[in-house]
Figure 1 (cartoon, helix red, strand yellow):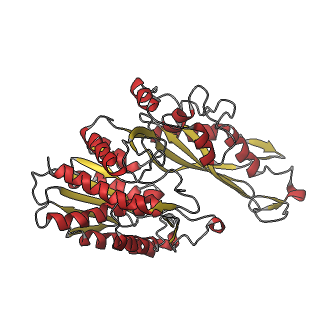
Figure 2: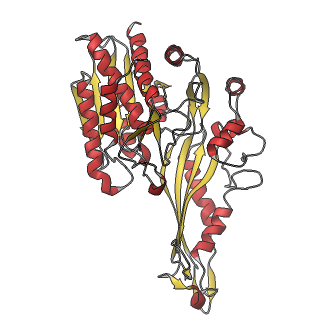
Figure 3: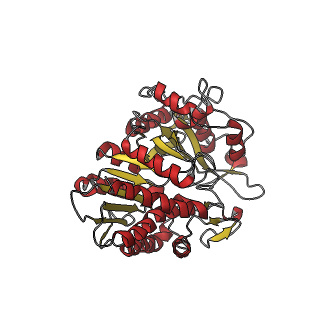
Length: 460
């Protein structure tokens, strides 16, 4: 394995930029991170680099090098924004002061997705030195700053720039190995519908001894709504029509799944759970990759500090995500979700001549994206499997993933191009969690894999 220590130092500098896209206070950091990406692209020998800001969002970096229009064209994608770091007290080292421990870089964004984005940028720098003034492959790059915040900017920009993004296929490095010794290439991803429910009641927080029993508690109303969303006995989502467009798992999916060395005990261990749970009638692997789900991601209600405060809260809210499968329409699911919430919400009541709803319930969509299902036997995926086997010493298995990468749907469905998920993360990289890491060996080998794939494309 060749070591790229200079590139490692550059990645550490990149990781020091706290580019948290969901928090407004990091707006300047987002601009800094986009500038870092643009500079890294130029160092790779690509002079045409543009930065776009759509509707006041975070910068989107687009670049291209077209030496010969007759050459194959590859679109490379990554994102430079990262998740918030909470809970901060669970980090062993500061999330934006990258620390190397046990052969891994610990920092927010190290694996998702700055480290993996850099495998593209540094592979191009190596290839530029090899190829000189005439590249055998046309390269386009798009790096966004809103993947962790819904991707509104890139969705709008891509819809208006189909021709600019046109390529033979796209490469996305934002996934992980199935197991430490088992590389994997995704051929299917679930989509996502992310919703927020807000219940408001009295004009202020109230003393529960004075007002309790006389005013409806927004927390109780919210609890009733949340309880109606999923059956904990069967694991089935209870929203009417939720499963209407779900396509049954195919024989091809089951054949490929049989080749995946999925260990339920290992899965439970990695989750830190006691046992598996989910929709009746399906294996754990099927439930986390090929079936839709609903999860409560956060609840806010009343006093959260130490000790007691006898308060009847003015407001309660919850954030709920649904992972949807290909063929489910995210807008349709969001509509059905809100219709259900409004149907379950407390009805109009009349007390002491005062008529009105005891609480006000609002349901809104935060972001959504469709799932995607690729041809697992496409020539580009086959080439990627060959390259990964050569670099990592094991042939990748083909899997469906439960995660969501919204840009993949834009590339595949809207732009009609094939997509290759060339991921170098590990399943224990703690994405979105404290102590996120990216293993240095994966970083170095990732650079090699991207180089070999692009060289293979250039020889066609």
